[in-house]
Image (cartoon, rainbow, N blue to C red; front, side, top):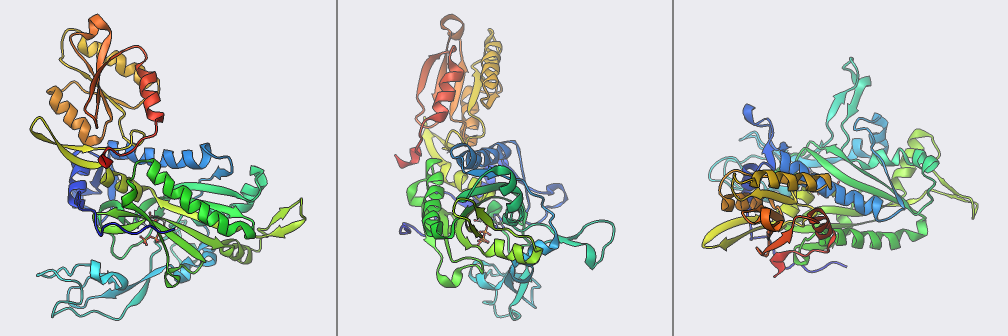
Amino acid sequence: MASEPKAEKNTEVTMDEIVSLAKRRGFVFPSSEIYGGLGSTYDYGHYGVLLKNNVKNEWWRSMLTERDDIVALDSAILQHPKVWEASGHLSGFSDPMVDCRTCGQRFRADDLENATCPRKPSKNPGDGPECELTEAREFNLMFETNVGPMKDSSSVAYLRPETAQGIFINFKNVLNFARKAPPFGIAQIGKSFRNEITPGNFIFRTREFEQMEMEFFVPPDEVDEWYRKWIEIRRDWYLDLGIRPDFLMVRPHESDELSHYSSGTSDIEYLFPIGWSELEGVANRGNFDLTQHQEHSGEKLEYFDQQSGERYLPHVIEPAAGADRAALAFLVDAYDTDEIEGRERTVLKLHPRLAPVKVAVLPLFNKEGMPEQAQEINQALRAAGIQTEYDAGGSIGKRYRRQDEIGTPWGITVDFDTRDDGKVTLRDRDSLTQDRVPIEGLPALIAGKLTEPWKSPKLG
Ligand code: ATP
């Protein structure tokens, strides 16, 4: 099932260029910046929120709208500490770390080749003559907190390190109300927290991030079939949203790489500027989690099949994706530069459904009723639920370039002729075609375009 990697790194764009565009255009800012920042935490600005919302909406659409065997859940971030005992996170959710006695920094012992020693000249930790690394020790990645006014061992709780356990502990609730029988799924999007030893690479690895996870409960004898199906469904989701096939691969885990709960995991990887890296994991979790929660809680979590009279613990296939990582992959895949009339342009060739803004509405000049007419068009598009941006400031070329940088697929320009012929110019971000189209029917025209299949113009 795995396809061969075509290259080692994405060299079309650097992470620095993505970070700089993200900041310049208000997608993502370093968090707490006025206080000097807090390592590897980020705040999403207007366009970043719109982009990430579109990613999450597309995920919900694929889980809830396009099929009827999955239900939604939104569980609490703070859960009973026993959840993490049962899931194995308290004892086993750790990475090996080493400290350097010379520089005082801490690194992941299993990733030293990608870490940088802070002393000059920069080398990998352990490679400099003065480096003095300790033995590796396990470091639990869960953030600890206290619930209630008492700060003692009885009030310790954890910020969830994954959304999945919230699903398992609600399995019985969902069975009781959802009128579903295996095979069926429970999907959830929400924040997770991991005290990563070495976060980095912008929003690829942070300590606070959003996950999109779905647990698909199946009769035990169907688990292999569903494992294969979900790998394909999830790979196609990225491709349908425009990720180029050569930049995506499915990589089955080696047996020594598997998590304690998994009898099979495949990562869907994207060719980032840092190389092939995980976007999403699809895991066969067997009945590990339900067994553990049944044992630790004393609650029966079996499914009773009334037809066969059989009682069993369903097995689980889990596609677990990151909303921030997916947003980063879509940004990287969309980033392009080209030349228009001798001037370089930076453009995000995003799938129109992912683009933060769908249409920019632009009066050519601030006179002769053009702004008023453009505002009317803007309102009509917004009333149809289309995210627009009205922009009347600066030359038309500058305004187009600004929209290109945030990935707006279409520009509508109101000009001198509009009042007479009832038409506007519709500019396409990718082909740069400019068509005269009637104002009437614009919302339907754009809504129709948003449902069309799309492939990246970078494929040529
Ligand atoms: P990694 O090997 O990169 O640490 P993982 O295998 O531990 O990831 P999972 O536990 O399978 O990740 O989580 C599912 C998804 O959640 C990942 O594929 C990724 O998209 C996202 N994710 C996990 N950790 C982080 C993080 N620290 N920052 C951003 N996204 C993350």
